[in-house]
Image 1 (cartoon, rainbow, N blue to C red):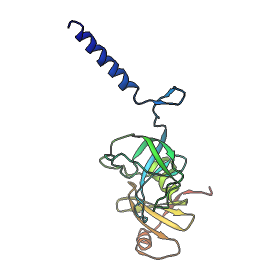
Image 2: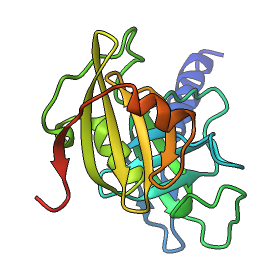
Image 3: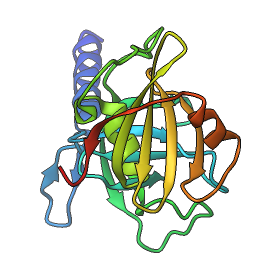
Image 4: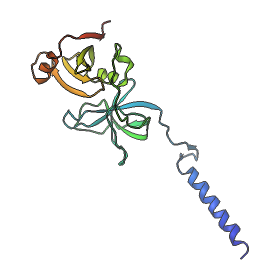
Length: 203
């Protein structure tokens, strides 16, 4: 009877050791590898304006990733920055068609809490602002123009395929129009008056 406490302590110790190693992967040769680390910086972009699309992850090198397996309690928001680790799923299909590849996430880690009020940017170099870099990737921007909008600013990203996207200074998408078409968005842009080119692909 005196040995029961010692036996119980040994069982608890062994159970704890098993828990610490359960996150490791054991290969066929008996070796173990640590769990994957989040080593790729990416930004969530809302593509719900396109049929069959919602959230895509844009990496710093311009890859457009459609994650297959976001955690059920994970809630992205526009321009949310995360660190991820992913694996390509080459045989997967989607209805979105805007992604470069479909991936399975093995790790995702938010870099910051959702800001209460996005900053209004008054800039002359859009490559220095994360949401502007993403907007440039999104429509293959060739020119960025800056306007006075209300009492602040707006930015027009003119795409190489003639698709123009208009944003306010906080990164909120306002509307889109094709260079050769007329719609409510093109009229809205014309009411903003004169613009200044702050970035050009040919510069």
